[in-house]
Figure 1 (cartoon, rainbow, N blue to C red):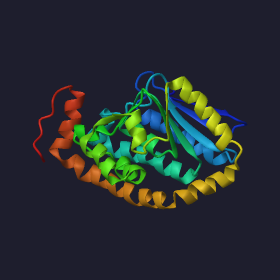
Figure 2 (figure 1 turned 90 degrees about the horizontal axis):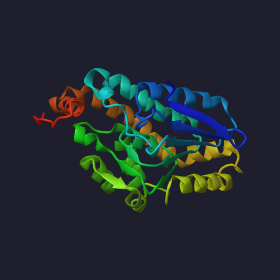
Figure 3 (figure 1 turned 90 degrees about the vertical axis):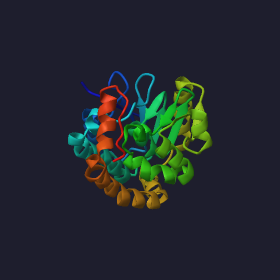
Length: 257
């Protein structure tokens, strides 16, 4: 079963990626591998001016697979997940996320790496990793640069979920629309006005230039946080207890260590 759908439009200048696992569009190893293959193929497509990400059905993504967060899987999962971020950075092709419904955890991090974030009124965004006793490496780096440290820490340290209007107010989203159909129509008009008429090579240069600081920070600190996650966090009782209690559908019993 394929877990992403990839199509092209506007004379192959726009790549549309739809996350689709038939349920919550969970970013498991299979979906991440398919995403990586798509991103790798874009190096050969010099005409690409925009990559869009969206979820099939009512939700963008419930996040990364909790099962794959278990200690024995964490290192492999994080390596594959973070590779997606490095690939998007390397490509320097403009990216846009179109968000409906749940956009949580790793799903929100995939949206966060995008240059543009659009959502409809059903969107619910959050980084609930702390609830499971873990933390979100990409969001820990990206969110403070996107929305400032105060609001970033509020989301990262509480794990709370916010609605589209609040996300717009704190600068996380570019625009909010009444529903998915309105978002689709408006983003189509937006790309035809602002992206499609531009030079693909110049857009890539502009992305690289505008993100020079962002990319430097991401590529410097994300590998370091990956090491902290694998070699320190996952050696604690509570990180493993948080993951296991979620999978076993019970309340975690923290030992604070």
